[in-house]
Length: 223
Length: 125
Image 1: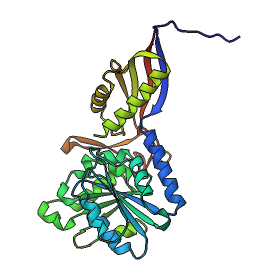
Image 2 (image 1 turned 60 degrees about the horizontal axis):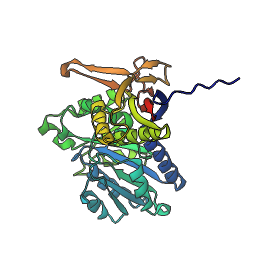
Image 3 (image 1 turned 90 degrees about the vertical axis):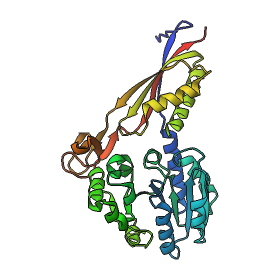
Image 4 (image 1 turned 90 degrees about the horizontal axis):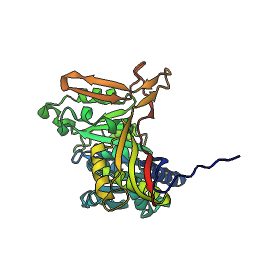
């Protein structure tokens, strides 16, 4: 016999939901990844603060890699097309994603951007996230690798203050190393902090203005 | 700022469940926030309040519980709380993926998510 207990009208009910609030983005990220894999495309999500050198690094990478791979670029920014215009000078397909007021790219925005690209003739996509060391860590996009760029001008405590983003990344780049002395920042200490957060993270020193270290980034990414 | 996206998702999920259950109002929503998630509970509550104005969710109390981070080490088999790196000189403790037992990189098992567990609704008379 099956017993059914019906609550009175006006009674309080408990509703079990167990629903993740981050799951929707994760699912879309998985769909993005499947779409990329289907076309044999490698995607790299480049994260870091405003002014850390994300665009400069991507520019250096595109310059060195564009004869080897068919590269496309997705630029995340609140409102401007400054970065997209800069990378478009390399003559590669560029899609600007303006998030308006949002502080990070999400998988849905990247899915929209991917629709604007000719995926059949693309091998490699650099996705530049919105300048921010916090929020992007929470929102995977479906990329194969996540690279985080920090720069000497962000000071000696930047890694300790933002450990979460280093947990999510596979490669860390310390940019503007030419300014270490004048800024009084110990690069070795920053590297030690990165290792303290994530012992498997590959860390590379660069100066994107001169191109120093860019070959090491390419090697760290396995490109 | 990403609390707005999370709050919007929370609002959508809770409102859908409220409507499906013929709720007159929702009195409580239970949330679980992982310690490694970057969701700030105060900001989440603020945005949820703003979004829920004028809806059946308006008076819902957010009951937030935190989930501790648990990790597993593929190298030595450690399983337990995530390691913490203490830097007393900066009054700073931060989580680390370094295994507390052998120093290799651990895998995070729990503590990353942000869940809506359940809610209490009052049904229409």
